[in-house]
Length: 162
Image 1 (cartoon, one colour):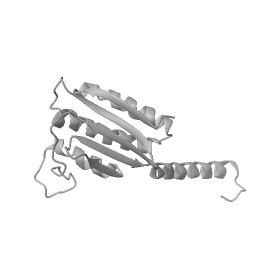
Image 2 (cartoon, one colour; image 1 turned 180 degrees about the vertical axis):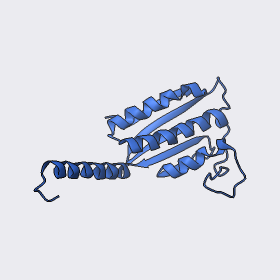
Image 3 (tube, helix red, strand yellow; image 1 turned 90 degrees about the horizontal axis):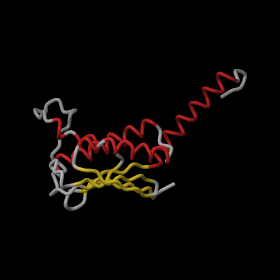
Image 4 (cartoon, one colour; image 1 turned 180 degrees about the horizontal axis):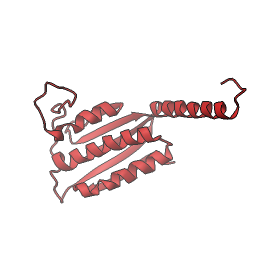
């Protein structure tokens, strides 16, 4: 099982399918359930879209690097663009009913911050690190497996207390 992986994509939204393949491969290797797979994929997709659109401004001469590291009980994805950096606090809270902001492009950072266990930027603000705690993933998997086992025993061994 690898502990690190990297991919580089061009600054085009047509390259996003590579992100799904990347996350799927990692999810398969680390036995990540479909709920966490979706959470990781959505977070990474938003980060890469931001890098392509706001960081690299769709420049065909630029690329986006995505790296993965598994260590210390966490899965970390780092998305780095070749832009000048962007504001990490200027995003829209889509749950704020009093907000007059309707720009959907500012919601990506909100989503990432609420889906990931931890989010950080480099000093230049052109590299975003998204962290997912493995213990959280394993806990959900354990709960899912326990429920499946209980259901199995209830259906197949009616005289056994579960």
